[in-house]
Length: 222
Length: 307
Image (cartoon, each protein chain N blue to C red):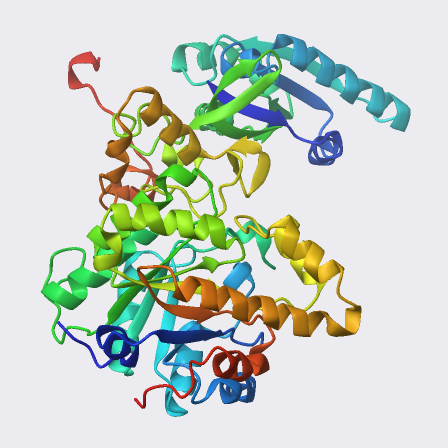
């Protein structure tokens, strides 16, 4: 899923300063699962904004709408009947959803209420962690399911740097060293000598470095 | 294949090599490089010039290499993968070779988190092993990573680093083996304080036959004080300073600690010289370059073969 963090309330309030009629958007997909931008979080943020505005004596009207998905035209279209009744849209969807709604309704600004952070998993209840960077050329076959691009702070392809100690990364003591995990996995599967394979220079052109990516299935196009 | 490298000549002659390092200044004053270099003159076979070490902005390695070159040194240009993509890396390699730099040390580079610009974007387009491969491809085949031919190929003696004390320990010798396969011709290790563990690593290195493919220089760092010893033990990732050395420094009166640090350093040199497969030492006297002559002399490694 795509994981995000809510922006600091002060930053949100400052962004909203010029506006009094706010369409507050949530998304029922990833940001609901990672508890940052679903219907519940939309309601909480709406209350916070109303309280602040009441305290400051500045009127505000907020409509809360949580779409099934913000990254799909059929759901974004459902905003059409009422989006122009509002001065601005404030979105708790990921960066994709924020942009996509803005692309459809060009006479309205869509503000971000979250910082989109990574593609990750739910490690345990309330804990999400990064697993993939969408580099466009998966190497998980060679590292037995642990991504060095994402999980090593230096994206090293050929082994741990000199800062791996006690199984943790020197950059953050809370982060396991990706290469410790890979080596452990090689051992677990009885293939430690696979570590000796030199991984060649990577083709980053299929990653973000090659520019924004697009996938087209001609047979599915209408 | 041979280069104009003095270090290569010394190592290939089977002479126990001595290298040291010079960290460039955080400014544009060439005198700062000359001052540090002045301490080392005549006492080393080559001098490493660090590349924005600990991710702190400093004078570029290549520039400081050139200043040292004019002083008669054979500089080892350190190059990290943190700040350059493959285009900049290859460009700097051509530039270094054009300016008469004979040695390059290929490193991943410290993470920018530890430096003075922790909000910087890092590069890591290639890693240290891929960098070694890249340099060797340029030097041996006269080709860029892209496969295109280089007009006027560079000549460089190619080195790498190894940390025998980092984890996972069981692949640390294999990691050096990978670097040897990639084309590393010499290696300078992380500072050796734990000689026992270093010896064990060397045994694993010998088991893989790597000592016959790569010249191994053991990293040596003199400790100035018990404070420095503790700092290195507790705050520098991948550094192994055994408790008995800390205690030895601790039990020494403050004014005698520097002397004791040099004594420990000389004992370490003596011990690593006795380990089969060790071809030299790399003295990293951090902001204490003036001690290098005394260390080299007292270790019986002076005079150095004339270049």
